[in-house]
Image (cartoon, rainbow, N blue to C red; front, top):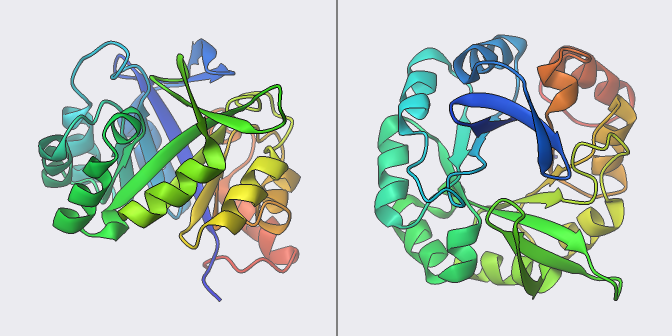
Length: 252
């Protein structure tokens, strides 16, 4: 059985780590490089960096931060936010990122997923899906940092990105983001069961039980959290020990 992964996520805004609720009301959570070093020492399985306003502000991504992080940590890391084309992916990989994550660009030009997978390998391509419940009981895909409703069905979009060559899906519930009420398990389970590639559960962690539920009820391959790690409420080691006590396979 493949070990389940524990992933801290660093949302970057103007060079600082931030955390919000439902994608708004951002508060400062420190320096990206210092946080990366901390999680590297803690033994995180991976780290994800997302420049959350790069696309909406129409500016470049955090290439410099990616390079600094690559030079200072050993933990695999993913970078996303503002990717527009294959050349952006190339620059990130050259800067040291192990994977690249895209959301808006993939929705607007799905062929970019296939192009990236062909050039860098499927294992390098992560598609981020920001989903929000609609009034019909389904889930819509949002882009531009949650600012634009595409009216795409999240489950159908997940299937499509897998077919196009994505190696992984980072699934965030906008309804649960920052609420500490736990993942949207219906959403997570639906997409985890609809695809064969790994799904990272994101949005809403407030306690260790939520991480456990992401695996057991949500069927996710990895769990992502931000606030509980950034504000040092719970350590990666505590999570790993807890999950192991609940018979979840995690790395030593």
